[in-house]
Amino acid sequence: MESRIDRESNAVIQGPRRTVVRPYPISIEWPVHWLSKVPSVAESRVMVRTELGLAEDALIGVGIDRLDYTKGIEERLAAVDQLLARHPEFRGKFTFIQLAAPSRTKIPRYRELNERVEAVAAEINAKWSSGSYRPIVLLKSHHEPTAVFRYYRAAGLCYVSSLHDGMNLVAKEFVAARDDEQGVLVLSQFTGAARDLTEALIVNPYDLRQASDALAAALRMPVDEQRERMRSMRRLVSEFNVYRWAGRMLVDAAELRRKERMSGRLGATGLVARTEAV
Image (cartoon, rainbow, N blue to C red; front, side):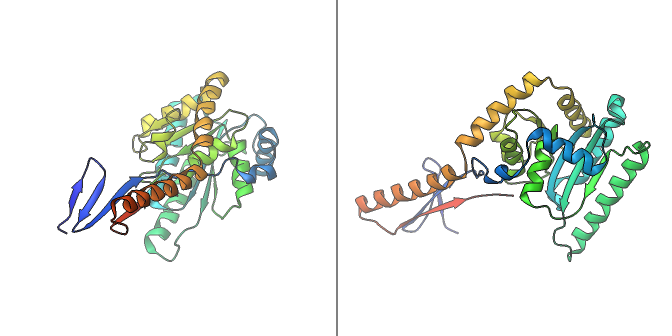
């Protein structure tokens, strides 16, 4: 395209036009306004256990996604299978709840994914179910934000296993929901959030052994360590929230325009902000 890259100032130059490119990692609102309508952590846990017929001492994990092949839902369920195979103390105790909103159901590849996820969940349940216990609860429907945040609060861990992602705001929503400063985030290295939320347990979702060990570590993690990790992540999400994200772009754009006015070349420079969100 006959363009030149100025790596020192992160700009693309084509003819007389200079376009500055900056990364602006997106975030969520803080505080999340939905939380005022969601029961406390203890109440949410009781409600979820009652609704799903889980034991009072059931250990709960949660995943929240669209049914999309980039989200690694099959790999996530396979990691739960490996957890139960390699760490038998969690059999009959740990239940993973997957909220999966249907997506692009008219596209064959997405319909096939839907069928595969159902088949994997059924296979794992057939292998490890006992009495009323089933390790996988697959809820395939759209859930309102208040319901989603209730599951965040009820869970002892949240597993985000994206195979390819932008930021992934599920990870940040889970952190925002945990005002009790407990719960463990298990996070794919292939998300942008993994660069921000470094106190999560970072895993390669393709490596089922590593992922299952991380799930076991999350379930065994002492409360003090959970709080230390969660406090650090909540501090980051509260500070670098969506308002600061928007403000940084506007401030940078204004500064760029000011410099162009001073140099007498107003209109010759553009600002491109590339954002990725899920």
